[in-house]
Image (cartoon, rainbow, N blue to C red; front, side, top):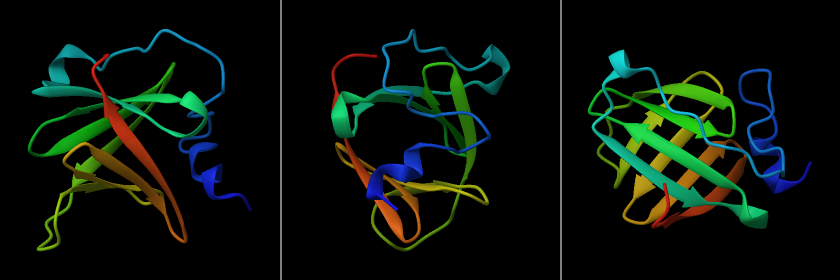
Length: 109
C-alpha cells in the first residue's frame, strides 16, 4: 500500500480526490479559533480548523472531526479512531499507522 493512501479514505469519502475543489468550512457552532491551509503530496490542499478541544480536517467537500489528545510529546495532537494529526510549527503530519503523510503550511486558506 502506498504511503499516501492514508489520504484516500477517512470517513467513507475521498479526502483528497486530486481535483481542484472549493474548500468548505465548518458550521459556525463549532467555533474554531484558527483556520490554516496545508499543502500535501501532489499539490493536494487540506485545511485545518481547530480550537483547544477539537479540530476539523477539510479537503474539498470532505471533513473529518478529531479531538485533542493530551501528550508530553512535541506538537499539538488531535485524533479519532482512524486518524491522528500532529501539528508542529509549519508541518502537519497525518498519521494512520504505519503510514504517515507530511504537509506544509501555505499562506492561502
